[in-house]
Image 1 (cartoon, rainbow, N blue to C red):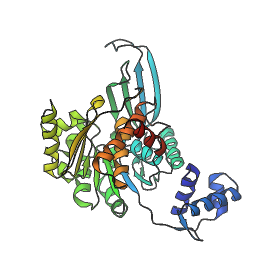
Image 2 (cartoon, rainbow, N blue to C red):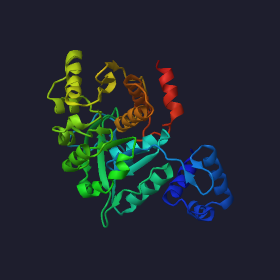
Image 3 (cartoon, helix red, strand yellow):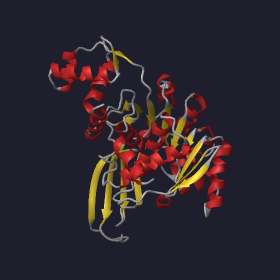
Image 4 (cartoon, rainbow, N blue to C red):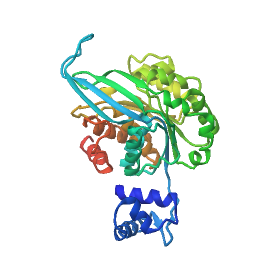
Length: 361
């Protein structure tokens, strides 16, 4: 679907009786243009018959952070306690939002539950979500609050050296708020959560909702929120340090890597993908395990690689790929992200993901 078609479909979902004139006014286009988009949606099977009868659509629910990303990079090796010549870039971010963004570009239908402020950046991110076809109708807006902010410092190789996250807004992810979304969450094909949520809310979700839940650890400190409930998750995607922190097992060689993955499988996790940076990704379930190397790419920015990888393995799950194929699909997504200076690559789409997999057979 085109972005315009996604936008029109969202409005129809919100109000199945909406007229073409009303759609034209919302989209700021002519009624005849709306009629063409409606015709295309019918041809694609998104709308069935007259009266906008919608086909029940499989969707992925993403619950997590939304914020503004500010990346500051140095042109030369960083010097502590000194001014480093470099560049500054601002983009829409948040782990949950980034995953939802990538998934929308992979043509998945997304229900995104997050917490917004009511400032300029919040409104711009909302507009962007609607343009991408990401439904944010179940998110919460906090009056008189700014958007959450993430600031990262990159070295001369564009690798993140340190970051500051101002995420107090996420304390509004209360259990009562999540309870009100129970029906939506359980109707999803899978639910992805990040650890920006409060610990008690994460506990409630994994213990009370009957749906496969994927966990993005975000960071070692935030990952500790899940250490006593890790076995409740269907799939987890830690990096090496996060996996070591949660398991208590130091990864020094192939044997310890295998032992670390088995720790999570024995706890009840169905799939684990341990990111090893340039060494690739180790994948494991109760049937098979292996290490897939990273693809050779021109590194421009590693910040969004993990979010793109999570989108890739979620896509693999909803399309019934085996764990190895899901891992390769995720690596391809991460590779596209790494080759972009932006957190979310404009080149993220199914055609390019499949192409990069073919090139790296």
